[in-house]
Each structure stands twice: as C-alpha cells, then as structure tokens.
Length: 92
Image 1: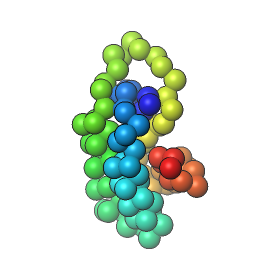
Image 2: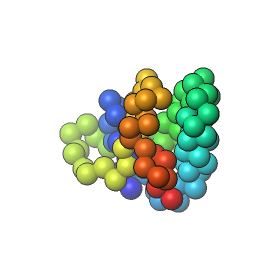
Image 3: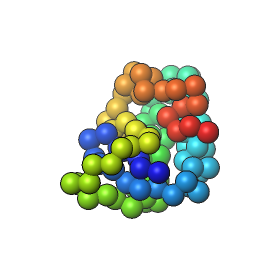
Image 4: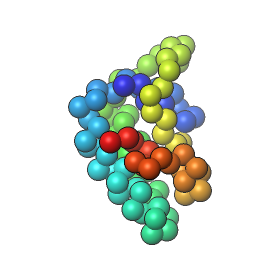
C-alpha cells in the first residue's frame, strides 16, 4: 500500500501493519469526537511516526497513486475532520 503524508511524501507500507495503525486511528477518532485536542495531537504524531517507522520511503521523484492520505503533523482537528470517512483515516 502506498501512503502519502501530506507535506512529507510517500511510503510503501505492508498491509500487515494496518491492524497496528487502525488502533491508533481508533484512538484518534475518539479524541476528535471528545474534542481532546492535546490527545489528538499526541495520537496523530504517534500514527505518523508509526507509518514512517514501518514504511519504506519512496524517492521524491516517484509519483505513485496513494491508496491512503494522512494529514500533516501540524493538521488541526478541523483539517482532519474534513478528511475522515466513516472508518476514520485508515479504512478497516
């Protein structure tokens, strides 16, 4: 799976990591729903760090279609609300 972090680039991520990422996505969604801004920023940072750690960065000149787009680290609650689907940021 190709994942784009807005403002950073793309990484290739094995589908086997989705379970771990979905746990963080569920936490992020709960924090958004409760308006817990500090928790939201902490969990967003953890989610993006996990994608960076588990994925293999693609070269900057490699333009592949992204199957998943994640917000930048400085995204606000409102920015991320606009990106959400019924499943959160990560489907499944």
